[in-house]
Amino acid sequence: MEADVIIVGGGPVGLLLACELKLAGADPLVLEAAGGEERRTRSLGLRSLNARSMQSLALRGLAEPLAQEQWAMLDELAGRREPGGSDMVALMIELLGKGLMRGHFSGLPLLDEAGNAEYLLLKQHRLESVLAERAAGMGVAVRQECEVVDVAQDASGVVATLADGRAVRGAYLVGCDGGRSVVRKRSGFAFDGTPPTMTGRTAVAELADPGAIASSLRSPGGLVNLSLVPGEIATVEFDGGPDQRDGPMTAGELQAGLRRVTGLDVVVKRVETGIRYSDNTRHAETYRKGRVLLAGDAAHVHSPIGGQGLNLGLQDAFNLGWKLALVARGRAPEGLLDTYTAERHPVAARVLRNTRAQVALMRPGAQVDALREVLSEVLELPEAWRHFAGMADGTDVDYAPGSAVSLVGRFAPPLEPHEPGGTAPALAELLRDGRGLLVGPAAPDDAAVAGHRDRVRLARSAALVTSRATAPAAAPAAGTAAAPGDAAGDVRLVLVRPDGYVAWAGERDGVGEALATWFGPSARATG
Image (cartoon, rainbow, N blue to C red):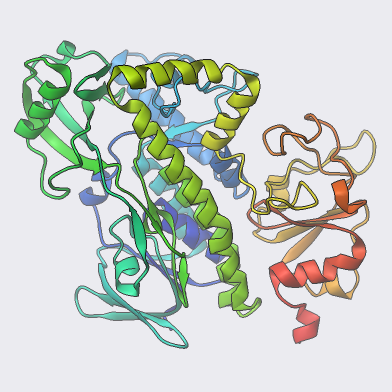
């Protein structure tokens, strides 16, 4: 075995998964087919990290370096547009106002009620550089220009065959190799869905007259957008999908598309680089077959409109990493991996549904125009706004719908101080080392808990504080304590998973079973 887990694909999802596995004590190996300039080509356009992704990244101390990368990028853009730079907050608001992170649920606000941006804008290569630096610092092995062409598993492991004929063996393998995943195809995962109806093109290009096209335009022919990234142009046409996905984009191809959409005699002088995409929407039937698993676009593909794909994949990595590490290290039974598909598959299905809806709302025509106007009116209703906002920013995810305790299955809210007037540690600090967290006024330290101290730490807190962003609509208002146990009686203890979600809440006599369910048997029981 060269690794506990082989990760095929070194994009953001693969790199984050590798970091999560390493943090939890497993030994990952990342195999990335591309290298150099080929990787940078994937970074056309801006990527948005939504509110839930930023909360999750904060648990690992990654939110601050990523924010610094955002400001560096925006500073660079401001420098190009306006020598001497400009106010970064004003530029951020301008970016938001352009709709770059808006999706296409028209009228959906991008700022919370306090006026704070809940998203972060990055070029993909900047995100990858932060994650690659973190992985390298943790000692994760990443091999570039290692194309995997076949995958085969047996009872004890998985073999990845490389294009040069070499073979790499690991106990488990995760395909993070994108929408045309070799891992998914060679492992026999069903991948059903709907065919493309649109062709998108994004290119770095030079126009003979850059001022001939408005910064954004929706016409009977489709859509065009001039990115705030200098030289980037994006078009969308509803023509049934691209004739080809590979091969260089020519100036003639981009020019023809721009003319069809704008109705203007646009002249494209040259194309430096470009990519094509569609709204091809497909979903793996399961995310696991034995020792082979899928994450990110390898498990689900959809229109990139709205920017939800990256966030969906990052959350796959957060959900899977700690579970797979426990299983690969022999600390938890393989059944724990079944919760990965059970929890993440419904989330992706919902994203696929709303991206289809967004594409429908982009189409030209009087009927769609009327629908957009009606939806804009609906979104003025506070309850409707909360529904769409939670869907777009990922804060409505519930891994245990119908639980008698409303906190279970949802992202853990902040802790309250144990003593009146005191301060409570931030959840991000307590989960930074990748262990779970058992929270209560007086968390027990009996044999059941002591046998899990390598996987779970203890924290004293009077209660967990709910907030509108993390609790169900019927939950108490922000800053108030959760109703003790809801319908299940008083909740004295809360078990928080390494990914920040609440696994269990209840009385002391149930903690041993909860720990064994989510973190494997006690070390004392196995030792």
